[in-house]
Image 1: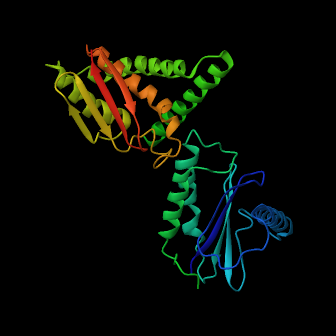
Image 2: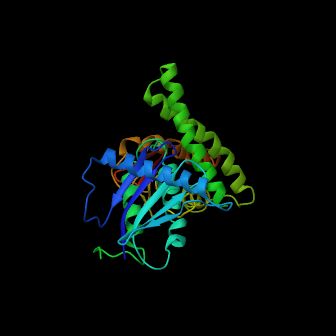
Image 3: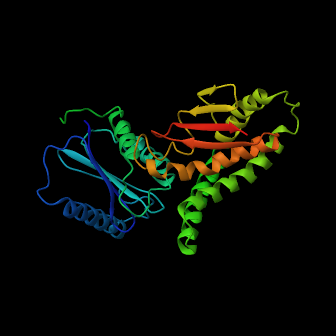
Length: 145
Length: 157
């Protein structure tokens, strides 16, 4: 069980940040196309789930799962949406992921006057803090299963 | 209390952006922006020191004043203690803070280094204002070689 990669999107679909840790297979398309594909999918699933829900829903789309990995999606009320791709495991690790990336983002991007909130994140400090955080997660392992 | 710190940080950052934006429109040079920020800090520092010392006893000498600035004043304003203080005993002091609060979110090394002086100007003024109201005329400058550590140089006039 591990963390494979992480995408951070803003409200308009621009990819602010992408990191990968254990990605054995690439998508075979350019990075820009990949971001568009990921965002498009998230956007579509979100509206699909909201529309077709037989009950009133609070959070909406949270995760999808395949035989090999599980994708977790988290959205903040403000601009940013984020999604993670994580290897399948029985228990949901969403609870632990809810809090952590937001504080890192707020601390090192929002509070950095030289980082514009609508552009791709260029702060090295943010990248390194995010990286140490993910590597420190209890379910992270350096080798993909 | 945590909200206060965030509020000041956001305000401080926006202040700097504002001064520089107005400068672009009014055709002011870069150096004048730094001076403007330093002067703002100076006036704030004067007020702050009055507030901090209203119940304190008089300081007996220059060294006492420096100790107050470096311990109580710095800790109250920047929420942490300084890491080192050196002097040549002839009016020059060098203060070192290895994790300066206003630079800690910016970078962990050399990235954005060229912008650091803008984000130190207000704080230099702040300390200079504090010293001024304690009767000490000084020049206060700061230098950064790798964020978030910074060295603050005091030269007593």
